[in-house]
Image (cartoon, rainbow, N blue to C red; front, side, top):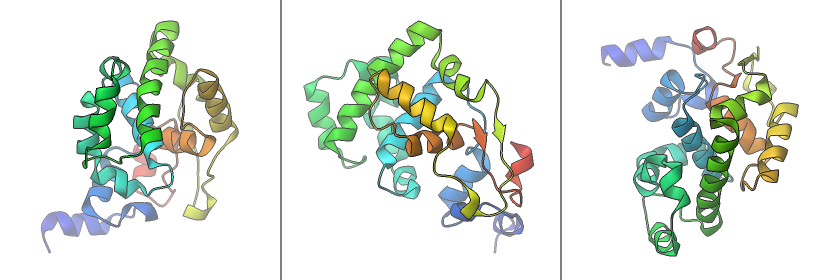
Length: 195
């Protein structure tokens, strides 16, 4: 066993994160860290929408494919995608080829830009649902984590009203967890205090 694997094995993590090295890395470095960067927030929104009905590991394994296919998650470029771009994406084996989710990503880019114009940034808009701060939860077991909350319900309702698709409350809550709007690392996880 290598030194990094021994060190990795010594840490207590959230149960969902230990299946692969890629999942461990995502958990240890990224998940739950507060994000204010609009491009990264848009990436999370797109990826969480594609995750609907699938496992996160499926999405994580294709993340680089998504980055290439969706212009590095540049909302301005995606908002201008044409029918030819849609057809290209439907043939791209590096992503999840779901016609509704692909159309949603393009439409969501347009709605995202409208929010940026109205609020100055998507970050300014989205963080209002937690009053600008990370909500720190103190869950002891994975079973305690909710699938949705009043905040994710409000976020979903408002995003839908603004023309977004694939932004149900459960997807919004997953987005909130990923982007650090909530800290849902278990209290036994070494990352709980770090983020």
